[in-house]
Length: 399
Image 1 (cartoon, rainbow, N blue to C red):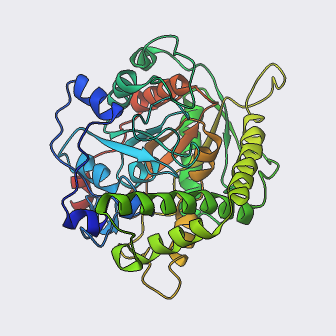
Image 2: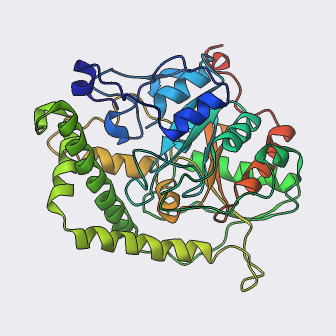
């Protein structure tokens, strides 16, 4: 968990999670633990406990986070896939930064048993980052499905997800968004890359438009309500770690941003937390209304955005050691201002390594499907992968 106190006591969970058991049942061989930012908070992997994880494409840059160690291991060729989790973009962000595939499944698709039911009221889910759509689809087949007592469920897919690798998605109507819902702006290079990716999808027979959409809500309000949920989660995590080590944690036991979030979580009321969830549910219904249905036959089949607003920044960009640790969260908002909304909405979303920056860094594009339509994301991802080589090799970046 990227925490120096847990490192000092060499803490290891004494049992497998349900997901870990499913990985084992699939025949996977686990070779070790990869690094994360402390408690998975930031979109970079530079915990005080373990130091910087460097991007294989450019060792001066971030791998993203929170699953940055996993993504670096896959991009560097150490393993073909690695476990990753996503509560605000932590599968898709490092997938984009490292030229990988990263699928965040629908809320409830993958059980968090036995430790958790719905971390931060359903923000998080788990799967893998991988080098291919095939591997992601195969792993989703192995691990999806509820466990008794889970707070959410999903419809059973009509067929195995690997079969979607051979199914055409048809001609889709795709909405390309270049204005983040939670505020901030995109680098001009990212906007052009997104439009270039849109042209590639048009060449495959899809209709890509940049619609003028009603706002999902005030961007600052959406960001603050997201932080309310994150702060509550960090406060709970700090309490759990305290129980593990047998004493209350202090500011000296965690990084400055972790402590700032935990303190905020302790000070905000339960009513404030529920209001944040309600705000996000309203946003989720607004997003859902954009998709085609019997009531909206002219709606879109998919939404497309850049995964990240900028090229992966240099290591140290998210430093939280200044007078206001929350400034690191503001920088995180600007960097990953498209991903968290779809944790709040619960929809499936995938980052595809479709473009490359002028400096040779991979640029992921995010496709978001209606709730429970992972099959559609796998179909179009396989189509795109067949039409052009995706991802590439970090080695090429040094040649």
